[in-house]
Structure formats: structure tokens, C-alpha cells
Image (tube, rainbow, N blue to C red; front, side, top):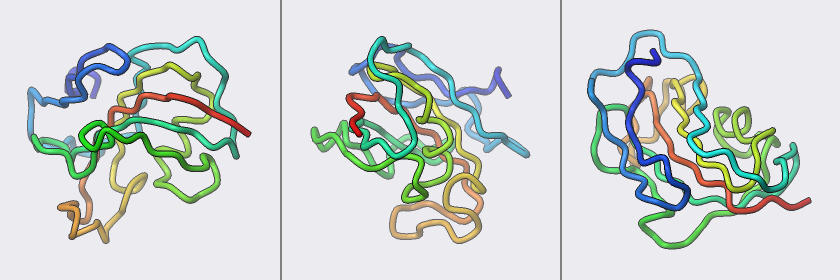
Amino acid sequence: MQEEMPKVEAKFGGSADITFDNPDQPQNPSLICQELVKGDGAKVEKGDTVTVNYSGVVWGKKDPFDSSFARREPASFPIGEGMLIRAWDETLVGKTVGSRLLIVAPSDYAYGKRGVREAGIAGGDTLVFVVDILSARK
């Protein structure tokens, strides 16, 4: 799967445009989190409230289904508490503030077979996120 990874600028706070050499969703994808930039801030712990900028696309698509970068407004939420998709709960915990992550989330780590039709996410879609961790607090 590594050779099929989407491309994104590896600069914290930079462009969050995600591109694909192969637009076909991978067969039997696994949860992957690539640390494109390793931050030197506090370590994110389960139960922390994290503030992030992020962009998410369905594998192979050009336009994000959601992007705080585009809104120019970071998002904050508790992490590791089951309030988000499983991919985020499992990949952000343990990372450090100032990190930029590229996350590939197979459907069983995202919205499963139900998808989110109003966001353009079909059941079974693999999602790709760029996440910049801005802060973490207890």
C-alpha cells in the first residue's frame, strides 16, 4: 500500500491538497498514519481536547468532503473517547502538537457500510485526511 499513498505537501500549516497517482480505492486497505512532520509539542493523550486543522477526501476524489483549512477555522474535540471516527481516535493519540499527519482510513475505521450520503461518502469508502495538530489540553 505504501507505493499507493496519496500525496500532500509535507509542511505543517501548508497546502492540504490531497492528490492520487491511482484514483482506484485500494483493495483491503489497512489503517495507515504517516507522520509527515513530527511536532515538538506536548504528546496527545486519550481524553485530551485537541485543536486541529484538517482536510478529508474520499480516496481518488479531488474535492474535500470537509476541510477546516477551507473554512479557516480550526476544530476542537475530545480524542480517544469514541466521539469521532475510529481512525482519528486511534491515530492522533500518542502524536505530538505541531505534527502533520496523513491518515488513510478504511471504511471500518470511518463510516462503515452506511457512509454519510449528505457529505458524499458512500458506504465502504476509504477516506484520506491531512491533520495538523495545533494544540492539546486536559
